[in-house]
Amino acid sequence: MRLAPTPGQTVGPFFHYGLPYDGDRNLVPPGSTGSIALHGVVLDGAGVAVPDALIEVWQARPDGTVSREAGSIRRDGWAFTGFGRTSTGRDGRYVFSTLEPGPTEPARPAFWAITVFARGLLDGLFTRAYIPGPDIDIDPFLASLPHERRATMLAQPGDRGYRFDIRLQGQDETVFLRFDGSERRRP
Amino acid sequence: MSSVPVPASRLPTQTAISAEIATLHQDPRCAGAAQQRPRLDFAPYRSSLTRHPTKDLHHVDPETIERAAPCFGHWDVDPLEADLTIGHAGEPIGERIIVTGRVLDGHGRPVQGQLVEVWQANAGGRYVHQGDQHPAPLDPNFTGAGRTLTDDAGWYRFTTIKPGPYPWRNHNNAWRPAHVHFSLFGTDFTQRLVTQMYFPGDPLLALDPIYQSITDPEARGRLVATYDHDVTTHEWATGYRWDVVLSGGTSTPLEQEDDQ
Image (cartoon, rainbow over all chains, first blue to last red; front, top):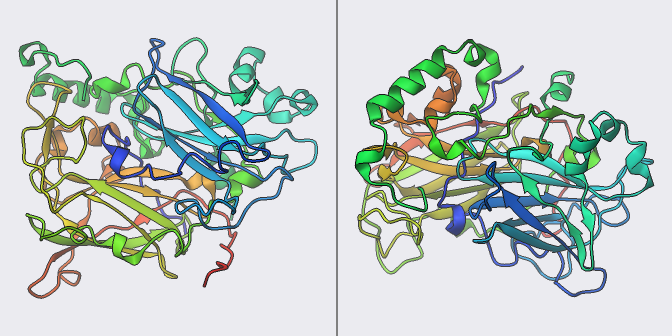
């Protein structure tokens, strides 16, 4: 049986009292051992900061395993659930406190799976923030992208962690993903 | 909502916006099964102009992390959070309703134990949000946000107040049809969905560029709930049924929670 999917709609401008919650952006307490920042700015096609976007991350643990622990909404400060969420500020910036994900399969670079929602964006977008390393050059998916497009999916290492800017439109538009082709191949 | 108000006289009319929608619905690129999702590039919704990607979404096979999804448990969600009419000193004003349905994957299998979040305007069409300047009253007994976990058969159930329609600044005399915002997770992160549920028979649906951005009529019709008298409860609340189908889905079962 194949059921037709329910379409998405924009998250709108008023999600701030519905979706964010205390501790949403802190997958680990900021400043705790091994914690790093994943941060960036969300920009529109005019290069203007998007102050009403919602960004989510979903990631593996540093050893590449996937957490099956509950507790993303009510953080206990100990469980690493792998999921975080934050809204952008007036300057379009977002920041997560998290751990560096490890690769989930051999010879594939590690990445944060990311969703982007915003007023003005009629459906959610998926992307990946890859951690630069030697595997970047041999990854078949990344190799399939033009070099300048590939660069939009690479997180930039810095003092406190990684920076990953998201450009919804324009010259340096972030590569956004669709997965539906693979789903069609499933029974 | 735009950050800088534009005088109403300089905004396009509903007639002009409706004509733009009609033109886009005639566009052959909008025809057929490909338009099961909203068009990201849909100019009648003015805020989309600078916020839609112009390049095609890049197809990729999901990797391990994307074939899994975050786990939420009873540690995270209090059962009382599914009732938006409680938690305040008094009863909220408006039409008490029950909204219930099943969350299924593309194979018709229930999505079990997953998080469903909702937020909405009050009966007067006003959000508890500093950015909402609609001069309708806030209701001290209604916030309008809730969450729940689906049960083993994929059912969710919220008790709330029927939201009112509200004006916005997309064009002159623009009104959003009444809706409840929904956020859903599946068994795969690739199924992540944020959408809006509408009410049957709302005359504003035909005029709304957000709803009409889904150019396939059957597809957008799937966002409209059904009045269900079997959900309606005696002397308490009217009932609406709305099922959600998440795209695809693997057979990965959610593991048992530790806290059960």
